[in-house]
Amino acid sequence: MAKVKIELDLDWLNEEENLDQVIKDEVIANLQNRLIQNAEYQITKKLNGLLEGIANQVTDSFIEETLKAKIDKLQIPHKKSSWDSQVELIPISEFIGMKYESYLNEKTLDSDGNAPRYSSDRKLSISEYFINKYLEKELTTKVSSMIQTARKDAEDTIVKALENNLKEQLSVDIINRLNVPKMLETLQNKAAELGAADKG
Image 1 (cartoon, rainbow, N blue to C red):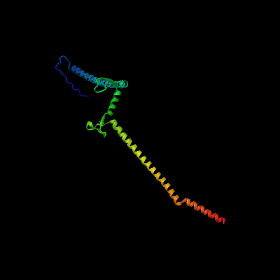
Image 2 (image 1 turned 120 degrees about the vertical axis):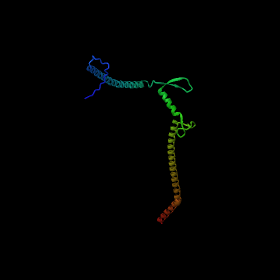
Image 3 (image 1 turned 60 degrees about the horizontal axis):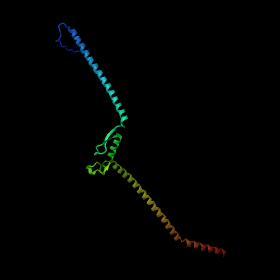
Image 4 (image 1 turned 60 degrees about the vertical axis):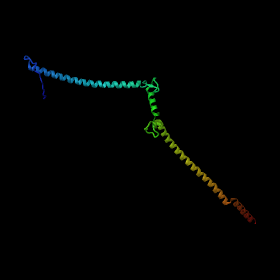
């Protein structure tokens, strides 16, 4: 059960008017006003939500279409040099490329690749730093590999030379010790003695 509190200003009430009728009219008018306000609030809230959704959709669609159609056609004013007063329009992609190239080639690092304290310490650009690091790594690897290969080849060559030299020395030494010519002569003499003994 609901309680309704109603305040009425009865100063304007004439004696001819019926108090019940006045209260009834006021209550109905008050309820009508509240219902209308509530309905207006609900309708406004719903319309605002719908309008916001439509506006977001239209905006997103517009931005997407604009970017698709016009990103290649967008041009940016650009001065050829800081001293030049003439401005030319260049495509945005070219402008971005120029800025990126300038960023990579501007000397902003010291010789160790750190941010310098003083402008006089700026010796390397980002691209130079990475190229130097890459070359240093590659050259260190390649030179190390070449040194190892050269050392191995030198060791192999020395071992083979020593081996061949030893074989030659041993062969000559063994031939001299065995005295092959004298051995052949001795064998011939024995063969001759055996032949003579067989005849006799």
